Length: 343
Image (cartoon, rainbow, N blue to C red; front, side):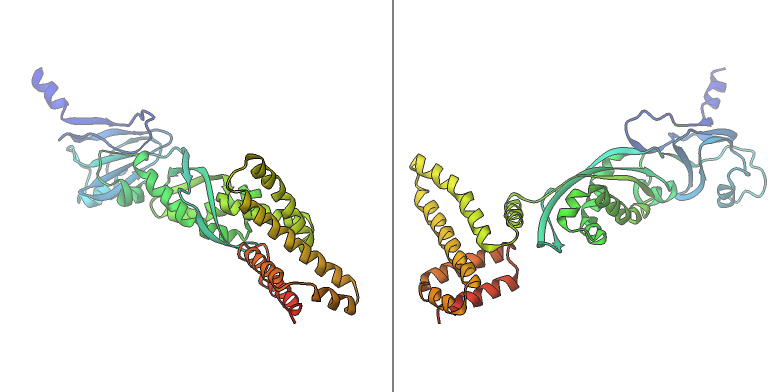
């Protein structure tokens, strides 16, 4: 009786896998020297697939269902093993089960800002993060490219690779969407859709299907956000440089007052910055007044402009151009206008 029990343990009658929900993508059925019985049952549950591998070569692939293992249900394995008729004895073959359910809430994000071209701001650096979901769609390809002969392959081992693929394709996705940064931040669904389309082929190459992609936030680094705030402030005053400098001066007054109240060492610097802003505002206001007056009045006003004020104005305009607030054309026009006053 003990001998019969021993013999029975050498043959496998049912091959199946009950997932334990730990995020395993691939699992090899434990053979331990045992052989598969002729006519054994293969049970593949919903959200699973099974693959027979003969001496390292992928043979037959099974979707959900219950199968009786014969030469009819194992045509590729039959060919590889040169069975010319119904096999009557047990056989050996590696059997791998794959989970095809969605792996949801996979996180991605930019650890460092990435640089992209933008039609509004030129080159900008942005941060973004979100999540995605995928599933194993081609177990044969996933086995040959990723999981291999390991006893099990958890989803956690793939996280870094997939996250890197997402980051690698962000720039292409933004370029493909054709959206400037401001529209990109306001329409994250469109950005996510462009990113999903860009990533789908890369996932397919390793046997995966990208099911969903979300973008939860798009933002600029702090220093660039300040430039954007200035750009928005300029837009609020209609792009008029005189009014913009008045806006800048008004923004600086509270800071100056705060420094004066505390008696800190930065008061002088604040005063200088405020004075430069006031001087620039005065010069630009004079320019605006000259544009409304006749030619004779313009020449009279020009005589009263000191070279130091013109140079300070040019330096300030140069800073605005460097920050992207002024275009090259606007800077050149204002520069030519100011230099005429030195003649």
